[in-house]
Amino acid sequence: MNLIITNRAHLLARYGETGLASIAASAEQLRQAWLADDRTQRPYFVYVDDASSLAPLGLQPIVASGVPPDQDEATAICNLLTALEARGQQVEHLLILGGPNVVPFFSLANPVLDVDHEVLSDNPYGERGNDHLVPDRAVGRMPDAEPPDATPLLRALQTAIALRSIQVPPAPRQPYPAPAATAADRPGCLHPFATSVADKGLSTGSAISPITNPVGAQLITPNLPAVPNERGFGYAAEIWQNSSRLIYQTVTRIAGGDDLRTCPPTTNADFQPQWLQNRFLYFNLHGVIDNSPWFGQSLPLLASNPFSYPVALRPEQLRASESVISLFAPFVFSEACYGAYITGKATEQAICLTFLTSGAAVFVGSTVTSYGRPDPPLSEADLLAVLFFEHLYSGLTAGRALVEARRDYARTMLQQHGSLDEDDEKTLLEFVVYGDPTLRAF
Image (tube, rainbow, N blue to C red; front, side):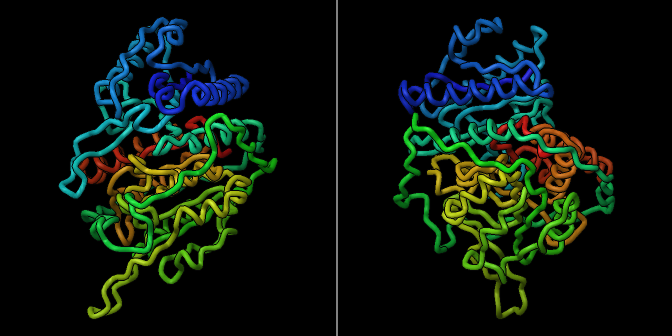
């Protein structure tokens, strides 16, 4: 079965009866769209805290906690899923509606001694045993924003509904090369500079007006082409260009794409909306926890010329390109540190939320600091990105593609090194899917 879940009490507190009704209506519309798809079987939409909603499944509601919801509530939801499966109803895909103030992330211990005190993850919602690293269920989330702003959630629902009406002819698949077997050195951090670095972006504490789309207002249904462009686009920090070019070969293997752009020399001032006219978007840039843009990083040409970190992309540039993004409904994978971090964020303070609000189909990113190497062989976030695209291109759903990418990643590292190190474990925990996990690219 496939399950859409959310917390009625938390949504009601944030958006009132009118807002709750609007979200519920769109969620039910998506459930009906799932029902019409032979490949998405037995869909249900339930409130985890509502007895009448859970009664058809024979389940008892959880007790909603305060704001923000605590970890006990997250655990209670997992127990609910376990109880459901104990009754013979196996959950294949789980879609969570709402951000961490509606349905909490799990706060997991950080296996790496770095700047992150914890790892925010949806992995435990997907596990059937006690393995946080490689869960079984395919989990996705459609988050809302802060202060209470349901625009990303509602737009993600409408994009998923619209994509269900598009019939994309299957494309021929080619085998992919196996991951490099060469042992890799411990990778360097994808975020080597302090999060307090000064830049031209808006800080978390800046006054930003959320997108003015009151809950309950009718969002415009995306005008999607019958057969989307299946090309890819990539944008990476200059220092990671060698690894990124290898990854980009996979991103563009199906139908090609433009040359990989690097920052520098490209910066946000040079970014062109037409680069978003592609079905698959790959980013290997810097991100910070307390600021909204993504950054590049230059090569260290001279000892007297230290690294520079130019701004590569700002959220407002995506909003300005909404017509392009909504037309192509891209699948986005970002290696940026904190690329999927949304706690306390307004819509235009997080590129991931802006992508969803602008009509992206799926966004995959990291909630905390991620790792990789400037040069092949690929490891950590770089390797996970390649594996995700391979499985997405093979016809798997976005949620299942990430599940299988984690499995292949763990298998590869165990074959190469005999164990998973701390960086491997963090990589497996930190990436999440925003959007409908049942969506397929082909």
